[in-house]
Length: 65
Image (cartoon, rainbow, N blue to C red; front, side, top):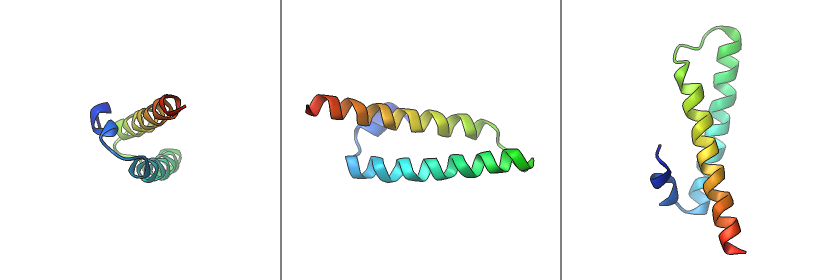
């Protein structure tokens, strides 16, 4: 996911997607701990996507005030 794609989404869409990504990150950590994780690169992608969404949300909040 690119930052440009994130900026085009509404606040509600971002919140929903953030929740989904956090659930996925939890599941990936569980799989990693139990040795069942096959795609280790996905952990990094999910963490970065979460950071991107949080950054865009913070930028929008600071621009609104």
